[in-house]
Image (tube, rainbow, N blue to C red; front, top):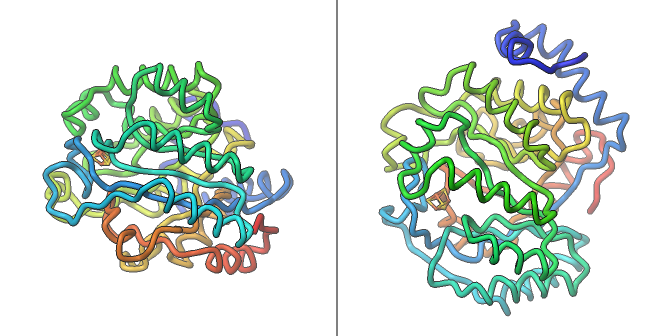
Length: 323
Ligand code: SF4
């Protein structure tokens, strides 16, 4: 199946779901199965949940009343060593945009991870080009800079402390420096139209992303956007995963997806398994201690478990696993 144009994407987004599962989803799964079929596993460490920004959908934005924390590089490197012992070879370092977490400390964590021989992904926000270059020179392999929504006006309304042009400039720098790029959208946030979803998908293709960290909108309690509508459609999210897999067979796509019960968070067995069967391939193990991890609350009900969960999902999906 060839999916190239906006009208073709729109057609697949509105196709009866049973038919979509039998045709499009089936083909997306087969594409991944015939292309190595490995379930990739990554450790994840949120080193700071402090953020200076005011994204209207985020439970960690500056105005949110949550307990804040910072973890020092030495402690994070110890966690990475333990992760390596458990079989993980990838690490994903994440944080809010924390102006008081010294940049040198981020470089220290990247160097520490590279010394352990790990593939390093970062999602630590908007920086200047020179800083991205330092991160790249320190050995970071991949950088996640989501555009969140390709509609400029919506982006500027929901992200008042930055703007769409600045976000796209960061993405341009990241790509230009040779990072693998992780980027994508929030799926089915309040007011998100099929036309906009199709534009988001086309932008991911235009950016030649290496990883689609897509996830349905999961309202963070108390945020302004939570007043505008509830959780995004799981079905639309699975449709997007399959469309992306067919359009870009070699990229990574996040399988850490919610299921029917929102309380299961991102380790919902049904949610993860449905995503793997729709063509997704990447799962995470949260390495942060639970008391801190629950306050890394960018989305509502973010819960992520450890390596054992990944092994279990690999077994259920019938996929060979990296750990
Ligand atoms: S989405 Fe990211 S940049 Fe925006 S407030 Fe949340 S942590 Fe900060």
